[in-house]
Image (cartoon, rainbow, N blue to C red; front, side, top):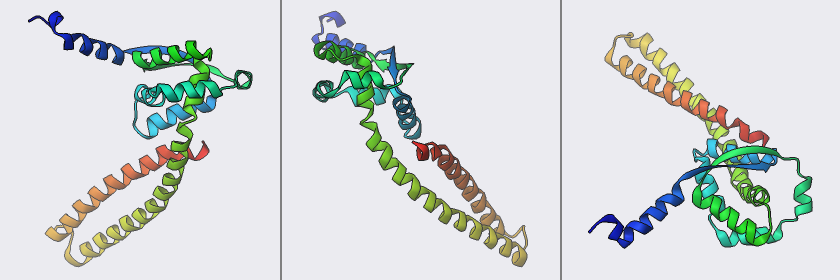
Length: 191
């Protein structure tokens, strides 16, 4: 039996076609563009997957299209931005846009508003991380003081001191990674 005779082959090819990447340009507000970038970068989600997520529910997208006030939308200062989306997502957008008479740009702009609740929750988590970072700094400093005390009492070449030094290097690496993550996350503070 050849692949062309297999009924599952056709549906598998259709499914793969829907996952193909395509470029699409939208005119969006800077806030929407920033929200997309922030969630994608900060949470480690590819923008394509993010678009799939916020646009995948066709009923919700259709309901959203009914609530959009085009006159208000046109008042929002916007700029062009190109994104990579799955073919299925762009087809969904175009379908709802045509059926509702709502521009794709407006559908994307208002769909992105769903991300604001995620960003607000992340802001709260970011503040908690910053508090915990202070505790980690204190823990790291205490470990460093312990190492210096051990070296003073036992000597740097003592097996105990070498183990404490090794633990300190691992702690330093983890602390540096945490500090870098917190620094990268500072962008969420201004959103």
